[in-house]
Length: 328
Image 1 (cartoon, rainbow, N blue to C red):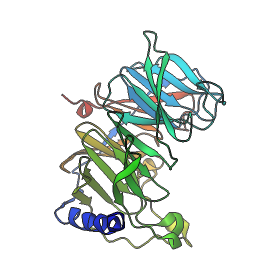
Image 2: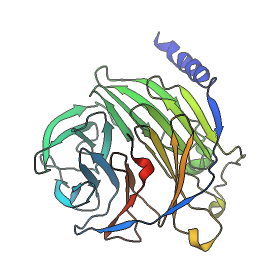
Image 3: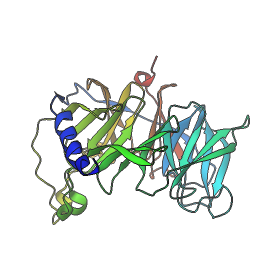
């Protein structure tokens, strides 16, 4: 039976790609938005943002303390944790967040290479370390989503594979595989960014205008969004001519958000971020141009805000009020 698994996997991917819907990416206009600057008094260099309960948690791997908790939507500092080191509840690597259905439990990778730390908050917003979820192996875990502490879905950018891992059975149970061409190195046209939400998986390609939407339950490809343009493979010998499309994608409850550098041919758009918003049927909701390049960035659908950070304003968070983002 084991020898038949690759054949079964190939048949699965062929069949899962037959019935997808194709839709053209098209927006009628772009709305410009300007952020409110919220001063950061702590010495941090944000790598990732994560929202849990009424808190924004920020990872900062370049500082001795690497996790910071802020109130929402005020962005007032509450507490810090996760000192760099190898002692109890210290972090020898760098912290990354794992999404989940839980409204109160926070999951963080980085305390060990092959586990997730489960954390809750006390009344003062400080960490309570609950337990470790053992994964029993290491991979390039990115954009993780944990279901009921039993299944971990994540993206491995080194392999260009989205995987589902059974914590109980200690094995990979599903995969979405993108073509890998090692001769192109980091300019492989299949390279993209992924995110896993409560109901769907979204994958945005870095070098072509395309987003794939998958059903999270069975990894079936549902919809392909494209601009219907043909794209030549990026030329590694001419990196200055390579145009990057999407650099981040965020899967929300009922919508997802695809971020790209602004490419309008005028000086006013230089160094800004475009955000395209879709529902999970692939219908456009809106397109927005932020006043600077945001990385990292996160959507607070509950309160209708976007929070971002830009190296242009190293001592501030950026906060944007977007009414469309609030999900009823």
